[in-house]
Image (cartoon, rainbow, N blue to C red; front, top):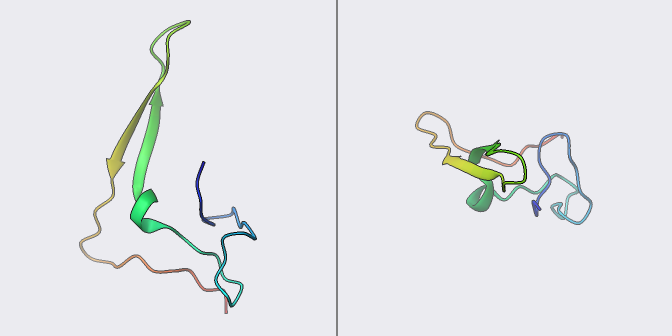
Length: 63
């Protein structure tokens, strides 16, 4: 349900006017894992926010 282009998943509806992949770091800067809780039980999604102290998140450019 990601509303962005990221990694190897370019989506035409999420691109800059120049045709570059458009990311949404405000909503998707996290790592996640699903926890299996047993047969016929709902899975649990665990998210951990990514904090960058030495680098800045930027849009990727292929130009």
